[in-house]
Length: 264
Picture (tube, rainbow, N blue to C red):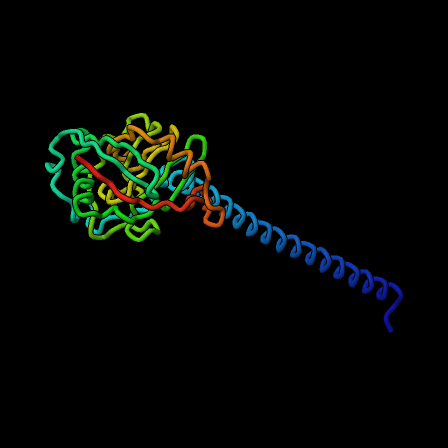
């Protein structure tokens, strides 16, 4: 039979073993917790970074920091090439005047600069001669204080581009990225100077549209009369809330269709 001393030593040894095992368990729990916290921290950092990148992308391609008139247009299949567009000589290097009629009642006098934007004006001339714009809709509206425009001319009314009609380069873009009220400019895909097409936007209030990798946005001309009527009868009603996007744009609350476009 073991002596009292041996029993005491065995008991102390068991207690030391239990204490050691307890410390090991605590250490392992802490290690697992640190690893979990590290993983959560990494995941959280990735999420924060992704949100930051997403915010920047939205800001510069679809938000108040950039002209989302452009996201409606699709990039050309062959970068750097015109597709279905007329030669820039069609603009004759002169000023073209005419009218855009919306919803049969809103008449805008317009002036297009064939010298400053010969390719874009030539595209307009061809579209007008073909009767392209008649019956097309104005599918997108922005009404923020420094981001205001009405975008029109989409092939199918959804903002999709026309794969059979696109051109470049960017012409007559303002060096300061400021597009004054009354400016008529061409919509295009982000980062693609050769994705101008049928779509255009009418700026209804001084708007800053930062250039992207391709540059600014082709200013084709100006509204010379009727802008106040456009604002009063159409854009002042704001955006249809059911179509409101993350950038604050959407379909105009007053459905808007191009009745006709004339040039001479």
